[in-house]
Length: 296
Image (cartoon, rainbow, N blue to C red; front, side, top):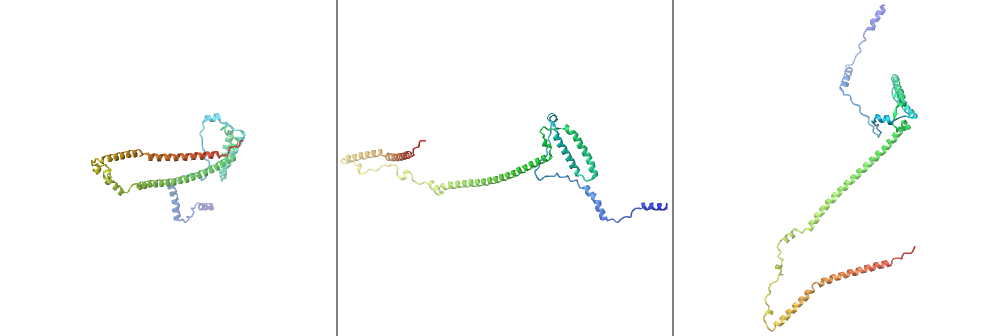
């Protein structure tokens, strides 16, 4: 009894205190304060840097489902069951803990069995075919569509680059056109200045030149009497005869004033007629020299 009584107090004795590091305790004491004060950071959505097909949800009326949708055939139901099994294996492969894996397997198996029982009564769209539930075919089709999308995206990038080059080229041509228009305006201004007379000439024209008819003596003035106007009875008949001759000469020359112009115009018309005749004759010669068509 004494040994047991002595042994009991030895079991209840507190352990010896171990030396502690105050710096370490301070650091461990400050950790929860920093974590509590820091706001929770929202999770950033994972972005894909490659083209991919995005799933889309459609709203279909219940009336359409009940009237137009049909049940699956047996081959399609088998493909759906295979999808269930693949989904089950995929979800269980990520669990490492055996206990949690067993619990998850039982829950997923119950759900899969429930879906398999409801599968024959589930309605599906009328366009569903036998290959619609083939996972390999669907994945291959998605990859083909993604490849086509990549090609189309590259084509769009090339077209955008070509459009940018054409726009830059068009902008350069517009700048050249603006420069040419400015040069044209400057050339017109310079031409108008060249055609304008010198300021000294303008001043000279504006001044009084005294070159009118009165200044150069074109206005008839009375002539002084000469010795022919003397009333000599012997010379009077001769003077009268000479005056009549002069009047006749002036009348005859007045009739011939437009004759020179008429002769010039007639000569020009004759020259034109001669040239036209020569041209016509040459054309006739060319036509006559053509080879005759041979009968077929």
